[in-house]
Length: 94
Ligand code: SF4
Image 1 (cartoon, rainbow, N blue to C red):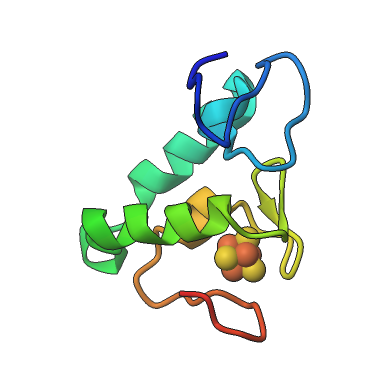
Image 2 (image 1 turned 30 degrees about the vertical axis):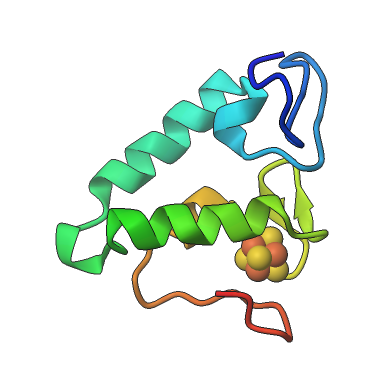
């Protein structure tokens, strides 16, 4: 367990519904995502604090499923990085 004592405890060799990709140990997928994130122009990115805030909300959301959003199918770590994006949940969580 990487984060003992948190709600996000997981084994990196198993699927964890409530984890982001960075917490799952899915290296190839995570590398692809990191390449996509790196290719996003700076002006299109959410501010780092806003990005972290969005991901904190996703971590606590019942729609998070192994790094993807159940409402739209996006990888939340990519969707949340785009400044102009919003949460697709009917409650508009971010
Ligand atoms: S519904 Fe919104 S808060 Fe929930 S996982 Fe999707 S983007 Fe994140």
